[in-house]
Every structure is written in structure tokens, then in C-alpha cells.
Length: 294
Ligand code: NDP
Image (tube, rainbow, N blue to C red):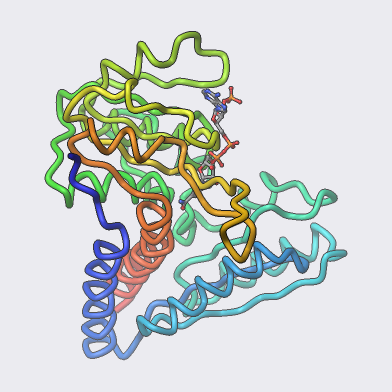
């Protein structure tokens, strides 16, 4: 049976490490990290993610700057707000909650975030540096960084291993594959046009699944002893639940946990780590700024 990687417990450990560093920063410089969380409109899911992020900041002593804009806000006004946050020395990280309303061009907005404050790691220059040999981006995107952190803290070695990433989105699959490559794995990316993904996955020592396809990856696809990080978070109907649904990953956990060496559950695996990585990026940005300017 696989070792089940407890994302909640790892996230808790990292959060107390962050809280310690925030205290040290405050004692030494009288300053704390600041994170601006910008939300446009009233989408329920976005409101709930933003609420989680702001609450987590408060718990760790990170100051949160709340910018709540109406659904009809113009792109020019949103960019003006981003510029104001760029200029505010108490703000060390800026996060614009996605998706934005249809009349706003996300790429044009994200590009306006100062590189030094791009705690989501989505700025094209940060992603570009991630893709280049010998260059280091200022920030790594949170979910891919969470996957690598879970592997490393579980004692899974990456160097020289065969890794497969299922999915190639800008926010998860692609940067996860680039991070594995930087860590010296040999990486294959599977996407919706890949034929016979099972034969590729069977070769992998490390699998990162981020396709958004409920239980697509079967136990028989997993190499015995492999490390499996399941990013997929899919709601499937479940009449036995009060809510009428439950969350499952992209991996068939019941089957795969009998074969794998390590596996993350859904929920309770990558999910709790993603916000924690955002807080870590904010702390790192703040340390960089405060130490350079004191
Ligand atoms: P996207 O829909 O943007 O990307 C999905 C990717 O998977 C695409 O590259 C797509 O290929 C590929 N894909 C889809 N179906 C298949 C298939 N049958 N076989 C192989 N590849 C396939 O999703 P995201 O990257 O945003 O998210 C992926 C999953 O991760 C979702 O379940 C999401 O909820 C979850 N997630 C979880 C987070 C967390 O913190 N736990 C954070 C972010 C996401 P193609 O490019 O060809 O279309």
C-alpha cells in the first residue's frame, strides 16, 4: 500500500514556518509582509477562494489589502488599481483572482503586475525564466510549486527520474513539467491529443495528474512504487452526501493507492498546499524587498 501524503499536515508545518519568519521580520524591521487580493464581481467560487486567502493571511500575521471591484469595472480602472498596488511599498504581493469578467483581457491585466510582486507567478516573464536553463524566476506558480514541495518533503527524489505530467495548462500542467525538468527529471507531457496515455504513465516514476478528468488514471496504469500527485479536483454526483456531490481526483485513488509508493488524496492533498505556497511567495517577496530597502 502507498504512503498517503497528508497535504493538510505538510501545509500546517509550512504555515508555522512562515508565521515564525513573519515574526522575525516584524521584530527586526518593524514591517510585515503585505498581500493585495483583487477580486472583480460576485462569483461564488472566486469569493470563497479569496475569503480563504484573506483568512490565511490574517492567521499568519500577513497584512491583507482588499480590493473588491464591481463586475462592470473597466479594464482601465482595474489596471489603475494594479498600478497603485505596484507603487505601494507595504504591498509585497498582488493577486488578481481569475477568471475575470469576459470584457476584461486577463493577459493584459496580469502583465501589468510588477514582476517583484507577481506572487501567483503567472507573469509571462516569470514563466519564461522558468522555461530557460540557468535562469530563476522571482516566483513559482503556487500549485506546481505545491506538487514539488509535497514530493520533496515526502522524501521522493526527482533527479534522473522519469516523470509524466497529465495536462499542459498555463497554471498547472505546463509549469509543473518545467519545474520537474529544472529538478533534473526526464519529463513527458500528456494532453488531450496524446494517444495511449496509459502506456506512457506506466513508465513513470513520478506522475502529476492535472487534467480535470475524474478518476481517469486507473491503478493498472501506475508503475509499482511510483509517486502520484493528484491535482485534479472534480465534483461528481453523490446522492449519499448532503451536498449531492463529492470531490474526486484525476486518479482512481482506491486502485492506485494499492500500487503506488506515495499518493496524494483528493481532497486533502495538493489543495491545502496551494494557498500555503501563495503565502510563502508573499513572505519571500517581502523579505527580498524589506532586506534590500533597509
Ligand atoms: P485545464 O482545463 O486548464 O487543463 C486541463 C489539461 O488537461 C489540458 O492541457 C488538457 O489538454 C488536458 N486534458 C484534458 N482531458 C484530458 C484527457 N482525457 N487526457 C489527457 N489530457 C487531458 O485545467 P487546469 O490545469 O486549470 O486544472 C486541472 C485540474 O486541476 C482541475 O481538476 C482543477 O480543478 C484542478 N486544480 C486544482 C488546484 C488545487 O489547488 N488543488 C489548482 C488548480 C487546478 P489540452 O491542452 O489538449 O486541452
